[in-house]
Structures are given as structure tokens and as C-alpha cells.
Image (cartoon, rainbow, N blue to C red; front, side, top):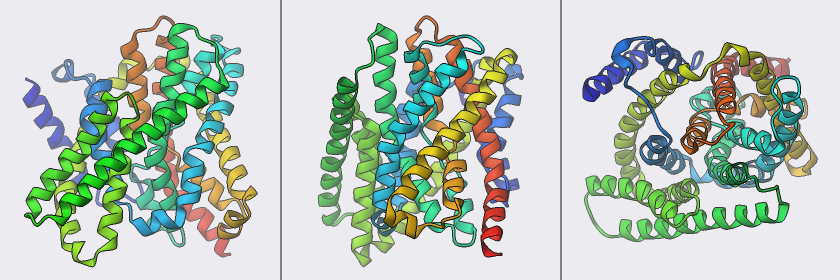
Length: 401
């Protein structure tokens, strides 16, 4: 039964990718999620589900590793400053503003504790570029912003998991928030993940020097992508940052040597087949899973949280970009960059993984938070994905006038 369900989902994914030849207007993941919601009402898919372990252990390592190694080293080097700040300092500031805002808004509905508010905020802060970066790159003069969005999403996936685990522990144990313990654990888990990824990346670089066939290199990248994640997770540090770091080191190695161009083409030939398959399954499963959590009574609360997430990201991104002189000179001074960076901060795969993680913990008082998070994620995924093309076109044309 499971095999038939997977094949059916893959067939649906294939048809959507085949039909949607103009993905710059309407990103495929949105269509897949909406179809998934529809499939949830068909009895054939009643036993289909997605869990936190499935996302972290099957989908994320491949998706993160591929994004990292295909992210050009030159683009990373050119934007390393703003990517690092947005995905660390910016993410923490967004979590703080979002947490307090959620706490105050909840007073209008079902009051949440401050710890619960921060936990909910930590679920909603990671960004997922999906096909947004491709849309931005097709737009005139917006490649730089697309690179920042893509690079930020890779790194903040890791930092957001660290922030989430800290607040999850506090929520489960009733522990009070401590700035010192938060920063200490944040630095240890993040540095540990990066360290594991660096070591694994060095091993990969050494093995690439050895003469072996390209298909063996493909096998090695599979081992590295999943091995870095599992090793870091076993050592209780960030598996996400380990996988991303290993992928970035491969990107650096491929960019440093011209004779590696054929190697990269061979790697892309494999991963460019695997990733659409994983994405099709992932977003269809997200749609199927989300349906049971969508409560009509929570939608007003969810809409306010969605708007709050946009506002807090706009404030943080604008504050960071336009208070640093070098970035203020590099980006347009009419808030175009801030608006696009804000709207492109779509909630997606990582947020869903964190929601399912919270669900797996089965903590008293978390059911409403899970429903709220699912609703906000769907609003973000659908509205922001649909709106990014017209917004980019409008802002670009306005700037050119």
C-alpha cells in the first residue's frame, strides 16, 4: 500500500512539474501543497503521513547539502557578511520581537505564556527560498538579493533549530529564560555543528584528490550529506549546520579548480534529478499532514501572527541593512532591498519540521500552538510565494522610473 501511495504522489509531482513550465509566476511548491490538502480528503491517502524524523533524516540532509554545494563560492564570499549577520544576529532579534509580539497578541485570544510565545516564534523564523531565489534572479538587477535570500536560508535553518531546541527545553521543563544559558548553548551547538561539517568537508576534499570515477564521487556526496548530519546529531550538535558547512566546503573546492567543472556537471546531473523528487513528495506530504491541524477558530489569530512575522522581519532586516554603511551603499536606498528580503522570507520545510518536532514531544498545552504554526506557515508559503513575482516586478519598475 505504501509503495502504491508513493508512486501515486510521484506521478502527481511529475505532472505538476511537467505542466508548470512558467514557474516564475506561480512556484510549484504552492501547487503541490494545495493538491496535498485536497488529497487528504481521499481515503486512499488516509494512512499517509510525514513526521519530524522523516524530514530531518530523509529530506533535509539532501536538500541542504545540494543547496550549499550548488551555491557559488564567489556569491557566498561577496555576501558573507550580510548572510552571516541576518542568519545569526538577525534571526535572534527576529525571534525576540516575534516572541514578545506573539505574547501580546495572544492576550486577545487564548493567552500564551512568554516561553510558549518564544517557542512559537522560533518555529516561524526560519526562511525557505523554495523557488523564490530563481524568481528574483530572473528579475532585472535582483540577483544580489536572491543570493542573500538563498545564502541566509541555508545558514538560518541551522541557527533556528538551535534556538528552537533551547525554547522547547524551557517550555517542557518550565525553566525560566536565561540570556547567559541561551547564548552559551547557542554557541556550543552551532560551533559544534560547523566544526563537524568542517572536518567532514576536509575529508571530502582529500578524497577528491584521489583518482576515482565520477559515479563514485556521487556516492561519496550522499555519504557526506547524510553522514555529516547523523554524526553531528549523535554528538548533540547541529546536524543542519554540519551538512551545510560540508556542502559549502565542496562548493569552495569546485570553484577553486577549473578541471572540476566536469565533476560538478556530473554531480548536478544526479542531484538535479533527486531534489525535484524529494521536493514533490515533501510538499505533497506537508499538504496532506497540515489539513488535520487547520482550525477555523484560529485563523484570525494566525493572520495576525503572519502579519507580525512580516513586520518583525522588515524591522530587523531594514535595521541591519541600512545601519551598516557598506550595505547601505551597496543596496538601493528606497527600501526595495528590505521589502524584497522581507517578502522572500517564506516559511517552509524547516518550520514544518519544527512543528512536527513539537508534536512528537506531546507536551501539554502545545496543540493550539501546533495548529497556529501550521496555519501561519501555509499563509506564508501560499501568499508570499504567489506575491514575490509581482512585488519584484513592481519594485524594479518603480526604481527604474
